[in-house]
Amino acid sequence: MFAPLLTTEVAAAIAAGRPVVALESTIISHGLPRPANHAAAVEFEEILRERGVVPATIAVLDGVPRIGLDAEGIRRIANEDLTKASVRDLPVLAALGRSGATTVAATVRLAALAGIRVMATGGLGGVHRGATTTFDESADLPTIAESAVTVVSAGVKSVLDISATLERLETLSIPVVGYGTREFPAFWLRESGYQLDWAVDSPGEIAAIMRARDELGARQGIVVANPVPLTEQWDPDQHDRVLEEAFAAADAAGVRGKAVTPFLLGYIVTASGGRSLEVNLDLARNNVTVAADIAQAWSALSADR
Ligand code: PSU
Ligand code: MN
Image (cartoon, rainbow, N blue to C red; front, top):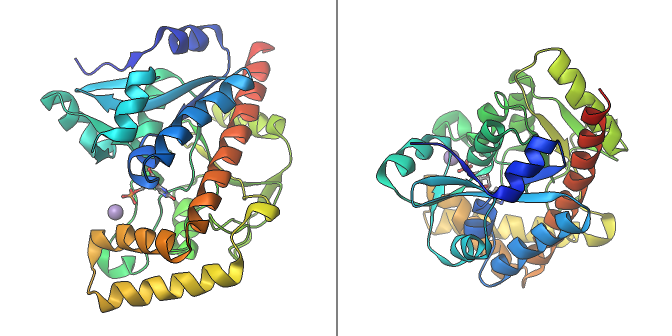
């Protein structure tokens, strides 16, 4: 049976309306190198616990969608070569008893099934450059459009087409709210050059938007765009230089299609001497912290209805 398995702790917190934050596992298995990835998975959960929030790291292990992992589960997503699993992979993994690390899309879908309303990630998937011919758009976008989960991210990586991603978010009627900013962040950088219609400064405002969403009967989740603090962002000049180099290298190597993003990301970590990885970890911690505050505010707001 394809029923998500919740840990006792997560199930009890959801039932009691206590704050819970979902965490994805693709960022651990595919987005960060070993062994920094294991340390990050453990740290993200600690950040939540320190704030009185129950962490629910999500993955599919041996065909069972897990909502909340024990230490062994965390070790598996960090150290095993797991498939990157999006929503379309969930039934296949379940039926064949296979394991997979869930993307934002798959995590959001499983979180919504379990009744978890807030998740944190690093960067959102989006529309790839060249999508007008490749059709390459992440399932993260259409999935958030039909799942009542608030996703805290630092925007999308500048290797994607940020303008097209924002247009798709608009078409899909997904609210995009800047957290302390009116500008959509570009993952490693605070600013992308694209303005947002809405900005808020507090977790209570996000919780109020979530409640209004429910009252309106909307299907969509909410994207909270949370920029990396200025002191922690990547130097914009180095960022631009390394990205340009990375695109040129991909072109010269004849890399195409699905292989382009992994190639670029690997190139960028090496060419930046590890700086892009440092920023990646900082922005992810920062997103987890903001998600904790939102989950607290949501729990408080839901309690006094
Ligand atoms: N962006 C990042 N790091 C990541 C990802 C995106 O900066 O690890 C992962 C997330 O799990 C996201 C997924 O959901 O990539 C999107 O992949 P695709 O474009 O194949 O849907
Ligand atoms: Mn794709």
